[in-house]
Length: 143
Image (cartoon, rainbow, N blue to C red; front, side, top):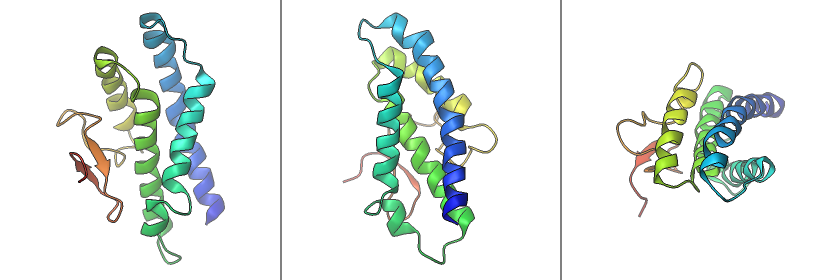
């Protein structure tokens, strides 16, 4: 099961990272005087994934030895997508966040990724979180 989940996570990362780096090369580097390296962006992304999928994370509490692989894959998809949004979009200004929102809509709502996040046209891309006990996307700030 672990190898299957590692393969799934790698597939997700390989689907998400290239469009984000292309976005940065096209939109962010030309609009900003601050140089952000691809290495730092990917490192932040991987650190966020590690944080939400590690031993003391929500995903560990939500999954047990008897949990179906398919259910765990959906949780990995949600947590990986959430990490991607914040790693690549969290440090952008308002104008660039709007452009990033369009990228996120095209990347995260395509076949195989639809369970990742709620539709971003309903509310802001940065206005949701994943309820740790339920694994569901929730709108608003957690109290």
